[in-house]
Amino acid sequence: MRAAIVGIEGHALSTAEAALIQARAPAGVILFGRNIRDPAQVRVLCSALRAVLPAGAVIAVDQEGGRVARFRPPLWRGHPAAGVIAALDPARGERAAFLTGALIGLECAAVGVDMACAPVLDLRVNGASDVVGDRSYGSDPARVAALAGAMAAGLMAAGVLPVGKHAPGHGRALVDSHHALPVVPADVALEDDFEAFRICSALPWMMTAHLVYEGIDPRRAGTVSPVVIGDIIRDKIGFEGVLVSDDLAMRALTGTPGALAAAAIAAGCDVALQCTGILADSEAVLDAVPEMSARGAARMAAGRAMVAGRRTMLDEQELAAEREMLLAC
Image 1 (cartoon, one colour):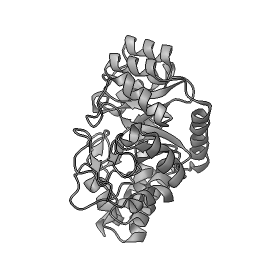
Image 2 (tube, one colour; image 1 turned 90 degrees about the vertical axis):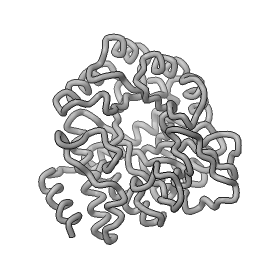
Image 3 (cartoon, helix red, strand yellow; image 1 turned 135 degrees about the vertical axis):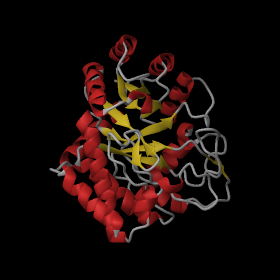
Image 4 (cartoon, one colour; image 1 turned 90 degrees about the horizontal axis):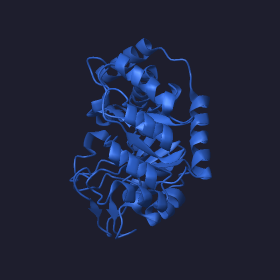
């Protein structure tokens, strides 16, 4: 299994994509809106992917709730943004976060998706870019961690892997990393940003941030910085799970797909993420990355075991009714 997750182009797996996945054996595939028409179609697509992916590979989707959702009404249930849940009192908020994670997880599992790229652990910072905005559970790291942890617990209760985003903190970005490289000045204190990730360091997966933290590594974005990954994410935060890069096709980073993937792995990511779905990009990334390291494979297996141990019987209709009541109060 190679240390990359890649995208595909359309609603069905092409012959060329199937051949590439069989030959190069990525650690997973991520789905986007271009791959999603309706539940029956997604179920067929995921079945086709499973037939060619290696054992243990993931099928992922960005499904936070709010504006970051690939499964959308009217064919799927709508889910509140993190900011809506954060506005509730603590007890109701944590329960609503759990219920949202569980409902999202059930929808993912029903079509064959076993990883939801959520929850967001970034702080909401006044004056920052709205790339995070209401995707955040707020500005207090303890509260953010409690709500994000509850959402992750809901996903795992449904049998779906959560991914904490975006380590070690994206909330202070003044520009959207989809379009430009944010730089956090050296004089900005980041302890609060790290704290939510530290509290949730037992999550099975986390995703990096494409930010330059000048006080840590003034030359490289976190995703490709061995200092940010080694000293902050692994040591200071204490994260021991699978670390996946954010999408390497975002304009915060410059370079060819293969070079960026190799740089992310060299910096300490376990898995490089390339989301364009362009066959040549996926091929370049899979050629550039190594086989999954023994440590990375062990981390993936540990994540699977964690979710298996947290999975429980859930009644979707009861969960949805309870959440509706909490949000209406």
